[in-house]
Image (cartoon, rainbow, N blue to C red):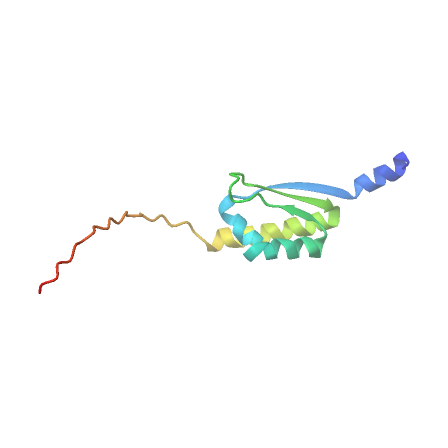
Length: 107
């Protein structure tokens, strides 16, 4: 591949890092990753969302410039919508203790 062709090929590619808090990742993924897979198919971009076990807020989007731009725009739309409409609620969790009881049967 000549330098000119390589340069033209590289000029069409893009890579974006999005810093979106982990609590919003499930909204972007959708049930069983359906939403992120559909978005990747529609735009042609590769979308990498870290698994729940990884404590990272960073999502990455890579591929053709137009596809990456479309995917980033949609991800940011989902994030901003959920950020505006959802709120975190703190809840106290109490531990329940179960005491075993022996029932005596009267005869």
